Image (tube, rainbow, N blue to C red; front, top):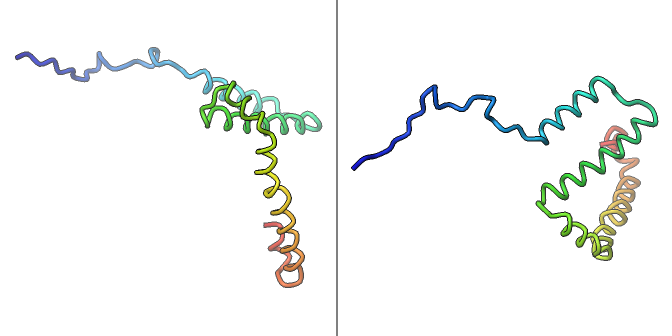
Length: 115
């Protein structure tokens, strides 16, 4: 009975030229290089800051959850459910934090406030 056992030899190793490069990684590295060479300032920096926040949110939403574009659009159609879930986080918790902040104002050192 003949057994074919493959052994790793220097001639069988994969060279760097045969490795497939992920286009996402290349785009990410090019973005970092351009941002390092041409940093934004002023109103442009503010606009890019907002665009970056939206892009990162979409990246995590679409890529991280592995949703297709059609599934994501269908999910956005349930705006009432999103509002019901977001309302306590955006309204109730902030009001609670303001109440706790007012209560702690005279009892805690001022350095506790920002953190």
